[in-house]
Length: 488
RNA sequence: GGCCUCAUCGUCUAAUGGUUAGGACAUAUCCCUUUCACGGAUAAAAUACGGGUUCGAUUCCCGUUGGGGCUACCA
Image (tube, rainbow, N blue to C red; front, side, top):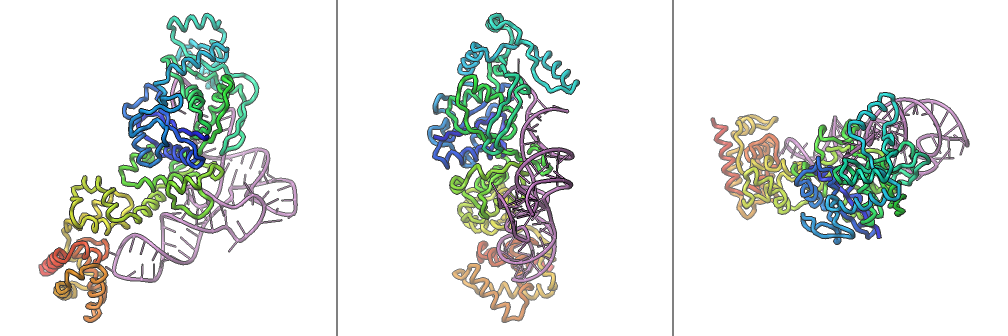
């Protein structure tokens, strides 16, 4: 049974790159009828953010990358326990300690009493000499029994991995193929910090093994620490999971996607009014594609078609234009009712009454004109409050003020004869079209002022659509207002 | 600096020895049209460079260049 996991560190928010990693892990597990688990890697107490976990979970739920049953999550609480849970590293300290002691007893790890100052100095010296940096094995010479005593007595120390100084570590990455490292260049990694917490490198191995993870899917930034991890697996005699290191997401200038150059947090996109389906679809295609020309994908369709053999090796620029396009596609497919529902937070915040009887019609007018939901309130404002405008707006570029003055009152008169029963955009278009023809007017000379009078804007939806949404009374009122403006 | 890694239009990518190198986003033009948006059409736009291997290289090998990652008691 395939088991994958997503293991975020609660340092504040879910990065879009993290979303993609979680998504691929989820897709792969789902596709193979396996399990997708979540683990919280909160071993860095200095960077710990109080509601970091809740934030990340919120983003994951929003994106619908929901965990399977048997996972540690229940709503936004970490309550359930999976195999060898809980999957929160700060709650597993005894487990790491126990495993570190085993390594120590077997001579595969050693206590290190070096001060941070000494380590910094060492690194500086190595850098100055243009030597590879790394621990010099200074504490390797301390007698293990004595070291144990010193550690027990409370002397400040860490536990280091005893890395072989010869040979090679070779492994097969699902995306990159064979990768090999010379052992001599691999550092004696700190396994247990002096505060009693494990480092990432130690915890990840212990936990992945205990959680029976079969496939490790994570970002490329981890690939160079794989040899350390493999050595730990070897010392414990554990089976090594398959690994897939995903290419990074990049800024437009090809550097690693950073906050400096745009939004990187999933919640940023949430707040701007991107639909989760759009973000997921877009992010899934950053580094993967089905090999066909289909590019609109639901989560279920992604599950069906996802395959690591089609995941690329190159970093992908996070291209917001393309994301906007995806968002528009999904926006277009929403019913007016659903659009009101999901846009409610933005509408309410802008003071728009979502219970207004024409709200659905109003959002329908702008649905194909906006890219993100946060643009919606501004876009539909004219429906509820006619903006102030100059009479000049009513004159079509190919027409004249006199012509408008002549036509508009007649149009109002004619529209007044149209019954409320026929007040829909199709009938209005038909009837007004006939009227325009009969009177020998040009279409633009009638429709432009009509639209301008109804919207008060240079750019807007078409006049018949607006008229339908507004209703007969409001339409006549707005046209009469325009006539008033012209006579001044 | 060392180690690892990557390289097709501006961007996301398809094509794993034989294609006029395909699609999408973005851009431009045109059509539709009262404006905007939608929709439709068209255009411009790529195999980083240099060597091999081969009848033939985007594709395989080597090198160069360039990018990225790692090089913490952070993940």
